[in-house]
Image (cartoon, rainbow, N blue to C red; front, top):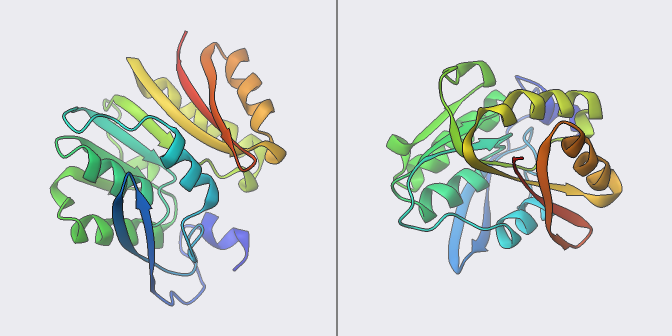
Length: 202
């Protein structure tokens, strides 16, 4: 699978559906994935680090969360499971990724709390208490910056964004870019060559 497949709106690669299993916070997940979406063969190592090292919301919390670049939905699945009263928006440009995320939300009984859509499908007045993302650095730095510049301003005043990025793919430069834009950025954790950044309003 080439990188452009998971960036495209309508992947041309045959789906070849299969199951991806992983464990987060001692909960086991088994999600449907398919070719033509990001990290279709397994839970992406960066996403695994993000879900392990970032601070997941408390089970009793509520609010509106965003999974930005949801792929087949592992972050959405974890957020919807860990926080049963939350609403989770799962956004991706890739139609196949959106279909898989919706199917995986249904598997978890979370369809009523998960809103799956393309970027332009999210109502303009929605504000997010948390944003979670393993941003697609390989799409190009300029496009990734545009994506973050579009969505981070939709954080609630006391909201927080959790981002993961490989150090060798620009984790430190992304940190500095966000600071230069006026965001408060903390390198919350580092593991296996990935940086987990906590982003909030200054």
